[in-house]
Length: 123
Image (cartoon, rainbow, N blue to C red; front, top):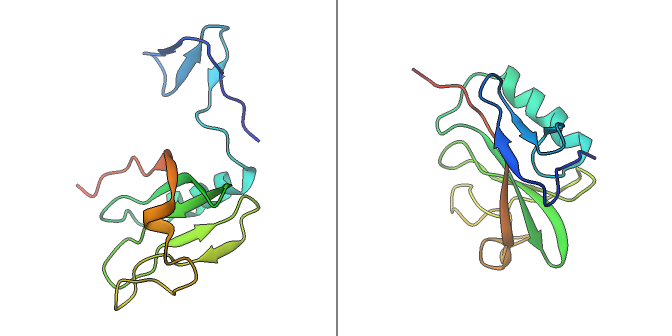
């Protein structure tokens, strides 16, 4: 798991690409399991999407889950549990309602946190 700075003041590190904690350590962002970094590497190696690919963390049914929105119409979004197991496709597909396994996700998910968004541009 990644470490975050906790309640320490975070300031932007202007010469680099990250944040610096008041204790001098780099702030890697929200806590997430290592498999998320592997997913980021896969998305980073793929062509740039429109909209940019992103990974979100939510609380759903009392558990931490990870949501990857679909890149385009008629494609499924993906919902993973904390271990990286695909739980469901809560939305998308031809009818837009996903695969029906988590039909309440969009309404019931709480505490959204952006874990990663592709910084590349299609321009």
